[in-house]
Length: 293
Image (tube, rainbow, N blue to C red; front, side):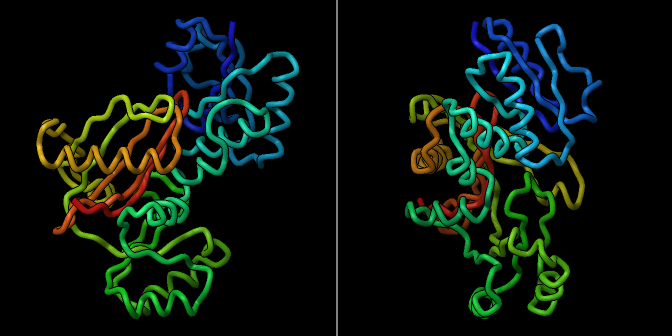
């Protein structure tokens, strides 16, 4: 019998946990102390272990090592966006299959994501890291507002701020303080927002469907309203362009096994890659890149 260690910062992944148990795996769960009493599918979980919500990597590794003294762990699965990096760190620490921190960063760090996509020849919105004042100042002089100030490792629309002019930007950067290097600045691109959901096996996209949001998710998150999405016909021009771009992206990002959720924006001259999320055994990825059709 093989053993899987599931990592969950939020109360998610119950169907995945149950399916692992049905397939004969021993399921171990590592979660936040505050979720120790949550309604987990305990009949499918052999052991539940906890760490403080913001525990440093060293503490998480120590708990994992203690678990590994009694169980031979075969796989680590992250059950939420916020657990992808922790899962990658534990795979490297325990030397297990699945992507490590280098690949995880392509799906979780928006700066790494955009830099990698651009290197692959995939069009992305104009962006700039926030390390150097002179570089930022040159960028805002060249790229017209509005701009999007984004945390590099958040999920969905969390922490994103739309900036209308230079003075507002510098006030926002000053307010960030020591958190400034962990954000980036990106050009706002107007358009319809799409997503492609995929299954990847042995480096090949073996299943993918393209869909279109009723309203951009960020607009719904900030302004309210009903979140909707609909699947596009597989043979439509929109779907074909999205599926092709999605395959180029996931292949270039070196996702070998897992599931992914990738977002694109339709610009007047093509499709723009927005975000991507990926999970191995229940983990996933997300962000923004522009792709020509």
